[in-house]
Length: 301
Image (cartoon, rainbow, N blue to C red; front, side):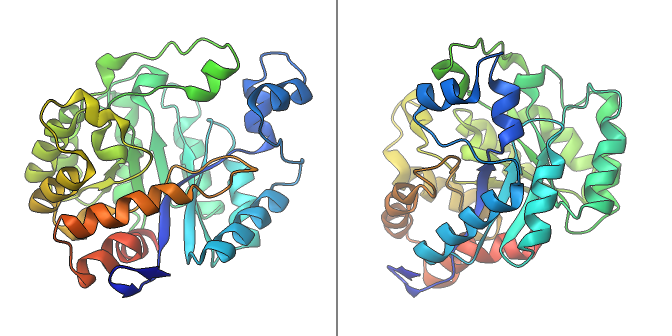
């Protein structure tokens, strides 16, 4: 893909795989036709490989190498597993895990060992648990024993935009959203690579502190990063990138878009906004190559 540094590979570290089961889980008893009409989105068919093919076509159209696709509700691992089996060179599988579920460890082991998924996604505010919950310890150990497995931990603001559009409550609990909570866990499980999306989604200072203390913590750049309005005096994305580069270095930053639904498909504006911000932050070609693709390939490729 053409960038300010020339032709570089781009891989997206953050794409949601909104499967048919995902929409069924969110429907609240409404028909999927009603859900589609309310959202203005397309509801995929029952075969996940068709949705996977749609994403691969989108990657081709925009010149992307590949992307990490996230099963976006607990229990939907099979959808992403089918997707990556169909396109193993283009899609990397992540899955959402609720450690409160009685079969969480078995699900995680099956998703990794049988299905080849590479990322465990935790949403503490959504599922109301602390990253120190004892039920997570065997999950961390599982990841620590398997190189190439990452743990994605959503911290900061969690808006639940889809739920809001459908008129569903979003009973999230921000008490569990501070990245600092991950400090002792990341130190103890130093073999595990943790990823905090959206630069901490409002907890930017805390995310920088965590990254300074824990060399196995990474950030992704995904979404619009509208959280910058919560940080007084922060001069937009340019300064976000500049400060993050100072603390994390380019080696621990992963480009992500937070793309999710069709007909929009891949969210092109995210990269268009972030490329000049990276350039203005002083990023050179080698650093840009790492952020845009190399780090994802190194961690889970």
